[in-house]
Length: 258
Image (cartoon, rainbow, N blue to C red; front, side, top):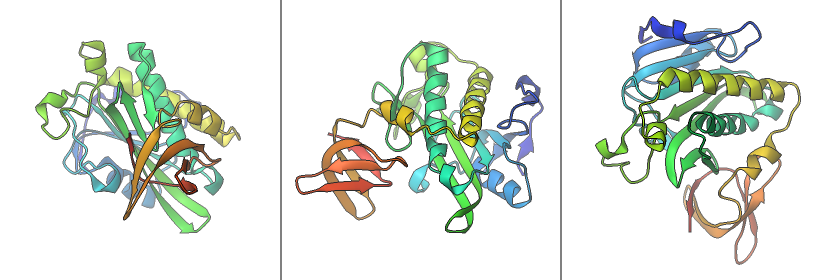
């Protein structure tokens, strides 16, 4: 495990919380995702949150490197144990909570880009990675929801993202308290996750916030490239695309708006 920090007392918890009831705050780690998964295998309770100031091997989808400013951005992984029928809503929970967090702090509306990015004026401010462990095709042992949220990142310092990323600090033109962002985000994730555990379906709300819907898109999915019009999503969040020949349902991929 990475080096523990002591300033975790700045984070508020309450007796009725599930997400964030236990928090491990690390100054440095290779990956919060890997830390959370290892702790899950060792029997950690649902709702555990692993936080790190710096990751040496932080990753997004397709093992892409996730860049952050050490100590200034939010990089967390959350251990959850939903049933299989709730699994598809973890991404919805996270992206809706991120969007709401950004609005609470900036009074500006971010947008959700299918499947798992949150943008502001077309630039990426947050990404989500979900990895699961399953005993069989329908039994979820645990899921880890990883979130990278740019709080005070200045993309100009990183050549690879200088034109494609932004941060809450750039939106507000101010330096933002990372722990304010973190406590807000965890509270909103906890609220939505507990609603899902009680049977609420978030798909309709989530789909209404997707900037991808109603646009012409190019989806790269492994070896395939699909060009078409994004009609909407199905009941589990898969993207429905109308091409010149047919309607295609896509469960994952990189989306480019055309």
